[in-house]
Image (cartoon, rainbow, N blue to C red; front, side):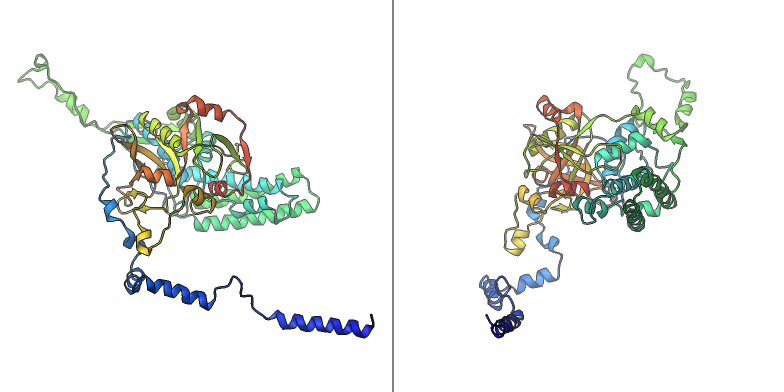
Length: 498
């Protein structure tokens, strides 16, 4: 082939490419014809002006509230436990920790003969962030050989010191650092609103990550990296002290015992001595307040009132995208270097309900996680499937199965609370559940919510149950070796972000 022919062919190719380069792709695009079709369908269903006016000028939730379902609600719960008081996490993501304390405080208040008592969330949050910082830097050292776009490394970098967590985070912290009353370490501006603190600490930790990775490139060994890591943590400790205050190593607890409302009923006439007043002195003593004062460390307080260790709890989840009866372990799902990653048993939702009711009837509060954003009527504290009828508002079906909701990221376990009671029908089946939240007493029904059983089926995803409540069939499942789950699995990735 002559050089002239080759040049001619090459020129033709260039001209063709130039001519087609600017032509838009039409397949798959939203065309004018499609828009006209959509508009016709809208108009064929009647004049849309009323709905346009209503929806553009009002809250979609208010318009969709089902008065029919709302009228079926009542606040009666025939099996309920006594609360030690409503707490408030305010502008922080510490729901898991508040829920953890809400499991502990009812029994604690009973032992202390108090109607209300609150443990310090700020104290435990301080150590949670310290531990998360250490674990983050250890993960950076562990993944030092990985490229920066490694999938696991990117998940580690995403939230080095976030507020979220799980029951095993809480249990590990309590076992290591003990607990203190809120009077020993009260909330601060920063502990109640963690946004700025998290941003600053995250930037600092990511800067440390860059430095550690460069040290690895420069040939430093693991021992040298860890020595530098320990020096880095001094800056994190300083940030936490400045924002949370100094965590106490010892404290004085002083409180007044609640006066009993009921006096002994003296019905035996032989014990009555009419006309004599020999009991005035004792009555005066009864009127005096009884003050308790004692010195503690966080560990000694924990040991005295909790025996120095918590009961063994197990995590149950309902994830229909995975096989039931299987034990899973989620990689990189912990807040402390020395504890195990999250182990969770996947069961049908009816088994989560069974163990929740069994625990409540045995006077045990139940920690659980759910998608709190769905079908939540906060004005009356109601979780009820269909309480917002969006189908009727928009004239279309928004229904998804729980399997699809999980698989396509429509729901996630984004909030933790505790079950404090269950309302049962005459045959013993649950009708609704009493929930204690951590949003303060001004939300819901004085801080409580009523979770209807159909909502439990659709949006409750995890429960934490005392292992002593478990039956042999599920205990056998818990003895098996858990299957490892990658941290980027959609459902389990959401678990890491609670």
